[in-house]
Length: 159
Ligand code: DLZ
Image: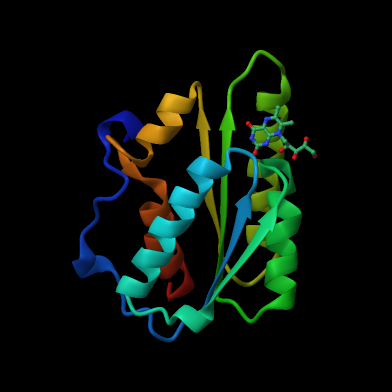
């Protein structure tokens, strides 16, 4: 379903398993931090709502979305986590940076999923404008942080 038709904060809690036994790493890009911190806050709130203990949530920061791959790898190697979420926001400018960064981070996160025995969740907003990002960070299309947290729980407990 296209994002514009879906509210990212809506989900059926009947299909979310109890998450009290898992630990989750979260890596956040500092670029567009005002957006990314909203994703982070929503994710932490959602993880705790479904049972993840605060002491089992580990957060680290990297300069930009391009660095998320390495940050997530380091998180998986350094902490005993059952899933890692990557949060970043890439806004299309007038330079080719947008394409390079989006391709780099999506490829990088995909590779991590194949290299480790835990899931890595793609919580990266790729938008045309700042407004579109705000719409997905607690605005009219909900919050991608909620979606990423629910995905992390489901994937960590996938059997
Ligand atoms: C350089 C850059 C640009 C132009 N735009 C963004 C962006 O919209 N979102 C983001 O997270 N990071 C951006 N960056 C920074 C790169 O991700 C990276 O940090 C630098 O290219 C250094 O590797």
